[in-house]
Length: 226
Ligand code: C5P
Image (cartoon, rainbow, N blue to C red; front, top):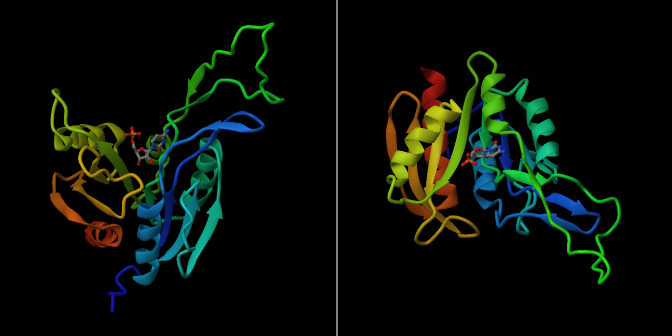
């Protein structure tokens, strides 16, 4: 049996990908399955937390038991739902794959191909960083957890990029997934690092997404006791 060490905590978790409409039938999206965020919500509920899961678009997943599940589509809707629920949450986990950009305009009618007019050009506008905004508006004592999908490159390792992102976003904990080999998106397994703002770093061995969720909640429980 799992420990009931999250009893009394109100938790809000985001999961899945957003879709940014171009016209009534088309959108920009991403390959997020939502599996990691769902596992995080499920494990939190099993450990006694009161959990809201704000889900964007996901693979077909069973709703986690004992979790208040709400669906959103766009980054703007995800932002509204997270801001509302974060107001009285003790812990916020941003596991969603939020689109960094949206089409600058949404056409009212389906965009048609035509031999008489040039092919359309799509311009993009940057979406707000929901995680960074939540950090700015955080209540006293609230723990905020972010995710980062990184690849190692000539400028540094996955871990270097993760450390820099943790500092930039200002969250308390950051899960850094290595997305090079094996990948995290759409996969059953995950691996990486869990970085804390106080400098603590735990490796997350490759394993099922529920195992990463358990490591995450261990670190959050520790953070809340500090
Ligand atoms: O900067 P990057 O997209 O790598 O940061 C990833 C983290 O930031 C994730 O926790 C993701 O949910 C969050 N994020 C966000 N709003 C965005 C982009 C990312 O909250 N517009």
